[in-house]
Every structure is written in structure tokens, then in C-alpha cells.
Image 1 (cartoon, one colour):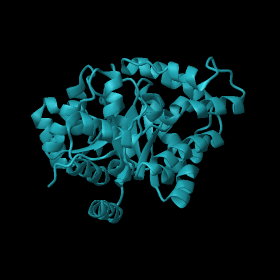
Image 2 (cartoon, rainbow, N blue to C red; image 1 turned 120 degrees about the vertical axis):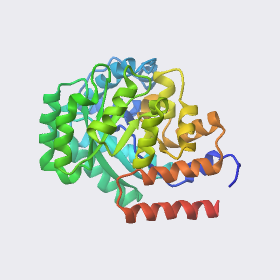
Image 3 (cartoon, rainbow, N blue to C red; image 1 turned 135 degrees about the vertical axis):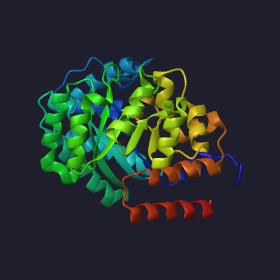
Length: 340
């Protein structure tokens, strides 16, 4: 064991998986402007600086009010390819060896964009990135929880022809008055289809603990996104640890939507043996990709190199890779640490 603090260079080179990343949240201002021009869309913002000036958030709701309108520039299969490939290039440069990426089909199909254009564009980027960058990746279809349960069910059935392109289903967007139980039937159907299951339990929401209880005990998820409020109920912490479930924490985005990145809670869970992981959420909007999130948490919590290595190990152990691939990536971490 060492108490040596990690350097930015050590963090950037450390092999890691990213498990909480919204592809639509990687839409950098430069690409937004480029896609608007390509698709003949008139934007209120005319420069990168003007786009960035709209990124003022103090809650989940204020973030979503900017986030969804920005997606209007995504129109064609090529647009979705360009978005995902740009993220995978950036992630690979920050030591990401595997990414499991959310996408929100309802945000696009509700605008008249075909489901097929979304998923095939994203999937083609994963194939090209694997071949050219050596980064593996998978897609997680998310239901928008502020849409109806019927819309979620329809979206799930639309995914069936593309089942081999999607690893799992999740639940995101505004949590207020939209508990996990609202989507229980769709998640039961998703499990029948062979999808892995995850759900957002955002930090400091009304009913956070009850929502975490529902995803654990009623839905039976394979992972929890955010989920940091679980520290408030030791019984649920025990359940998460005993089941080996990963929590996909996002320190930097936490500090935008609340007044706290939840560093104390994340580290508390880490010390208790919970598989907490570090991720970037919507990095184009929050200004930090995955390495930046590791750096921010390490600085805030005084983490050692051993701590960040454990977080990286957790990221592969909590992933939906098969056991052989997990072992291969964990061995990469061991080799990297031995050389560093």
C-alpha cells in the first residue's frame, strides 16, 4: 500500500472503463455548430463562446432544459456516428479501454428521427473505434422517465430488431414524480429479451432512498447509476455490496446539479467495499471527461494512487464484459502500475 498521490499523467494513462456516459452529453459546441450548418438548422448561438455561455446549471431540471434542445442538430445516421466517434477518440486518449454508453432514442424519435438512424450510427462508431483506437464499447438504451410508461414500452419493442447491437437498458432524465416502479413492466420485458438492467438514482432527489430500494428489491437491476444517496441506509449499502453491484458515480456533474460533488460519500462507499466507479456523465456540458473526474475526486478527497487504481479496477469489475475480458483488462492495470 502506498499513500502517494496520483499525478494527472498517472490517471490519464491508467486503464479504465467508463460506465456512465450519455452520448448526447458529449456534444461539444464545435460539433453542435458543425452539425447545425450541415443540416441547415438555425441556432440562437453563433459561436463556441455563445454556446458555452448557455451552460449555467444549478439543478437537474435546469441542465435538462439546455440539454434536450441541443439535440435538434442530430438528424442523420452520419451525425450520430460523428458524435460517438468523437467521444471514443477523446476517451481512448484518457485511458478508457472500454465504455458502456447511454443513448436516448425517445429524444430523437419524438422529433421524427428513425430509431434505426440513431442506433446504427452509434454502433458503426463503436466498430470503427474498436478497429482504429483499440477501445471496446457497448450501447445502453435509456428510457426517458418523464415520458410515459407506454412510450418506454414502445421504444423497447422498437429495439428488438437491433437486439445484438445493444447490451442493456437504463432509465434517465427527470426523476421527480417518476419512480422506478413506473417502468417495472418494461424492465421485466427487457430482462426477458436478455438485456442487462440499470437505472439512474440521481443524487439528492425527492424520494432518493425509496427509489434506490425499488431498483434493488423490486426491479432487480444489475447496476445503479449515481446511487450515492444509498449511504443514508446501511441496509441498502449491505445489499449493494453483497450483490457486487456497481455504482456509477459522477463527481464533477454532481457539483453542478447540487452544491457538493459527494466526495465524502463516494469515498465512504469505497472504504466499505462497494464497487463505486468514476465517470463523466455529460462531459461536454460539465467540462470534464473521465480523467478530469478522477482528478477532481482525488484532489477533493485526498485519494492515493492505490485508491484510484481500486476505482479503475471497480470500473471493469462492474462492467458487463464477460469474465475473460474483465480479467484481461484487470491484468492491464496490474502491468501499468508495475511500470509506473
